Amino acid sequence: MTAAPVRYWKRVTASVTRAVDRTDALQQRRPATAVPAAVARKYSDDQAGRLAGQISHAAFLAVFPMLLVLLTVVGIFLDGHRALQEDIVDSALRQFPVIGSDLRDNVHELTTGNTLALVIGLVWLAYGCTRLSRNSQVMMVAVWGIDRDDLPGFWHWIPRAAGFLAVLGVGFLAGGALSGLGAFGRLGSASAWVGLAASLAVNILMYWGAFSVLVRLPPGDSGVWPGAVVGGVGWTLLQFAGAELVSHQLRHLSNLYGTFATVLGLIWWIALGAMVTVFAAEVNVVLTRHLWPRSFRRERRSVGPPPGPLAGGAQGQPG
Image (tube, rainbow, N blue to C red):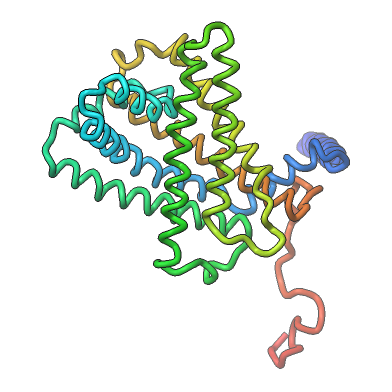
C-alpha cells in the first residue's frame, strides 16, 4: 500500500531534479543569465543579507539626527530665506518619498528646542554616521574577501569615513533636488524624464564615489563602475517608484496610521536601499574577477577527513 506513493514521489523528485539541472546548465551558457545567477550565489555565500541588515540599522540611526542638524543649520545660516530653506530640506526628504512628508512633520518638532537639542543631535549624528561608515567598510571587506586585519587603523580610517559621508551627503541633496523635477513637474511634460536622467547620473556618481573611498581594493580589483551603475539605477527606481506611489496611493495614509507608519516605512525604505547597495558591490566583484558562470545549486559537502596524505594518521594522528 505504501510502496506506490513512495515510487511516485521518487519519480517526481527525479523529474524536478533533472529540470533544475537543465535550467542550471542553460543559465551558465549566456552572460545575460550567468552573471545575475553568479551575483545571487555570491550574495548568498557572503551572507550578504546580514551585511545589508547592519548597514540599514546604522543608516536608520543616522537619518533622524541628520534631519535635525540639517534643519537647524539651514535655519541658522539661511535665516530669512524661507524658500531656499524649504528647497534644501525637501531635497533631502525626497530621498525617502514614501514617508518624506511625515518625516518633515515629525522632525520639525525637534527644531523648536534649545542648544542642548542641537548638541544631542550632533552627538547622535556622529555615532550613527560612524556606525554607517564602518558597517559599509566591513561590507566591502567581506564582499571583496579582504583580510579584516588589513583594515586601516582609527586615524587612517577617519579620512575615508569623512569622504564617504561627504559623498553621501552631496549625492543625497543633489539627487533629491533633481528627482523633484519629475515628482512635481516643474519642467512641464518632459520634467519626469529630465528628472529621471539627471537624478540617475548623480546617483551613479554617488555610488562610484562611495565604493571608491570606503576601502583600498587589492591591486587589479579597481573596477567599481558596474556596481555603481547597478546601485544608481536601483536607487533611482526606488525614488521614482516611491514618488509615484505617494502621488497616487499614499496621500492619506498618515491620517490613518500616524507616526507608527512613518517609522515602519522608513525602516522598510532604508532596508531596500541597503540591499541594493550590497548587491551592487557583489556585481563589482563578480565582473572584476570573472566569477561566472556558477551553478546556483549548492554542492553537498562530504563529512569526514579529506582524501590524501593529510587524512587519517599521515601526521601521526590516529585514523
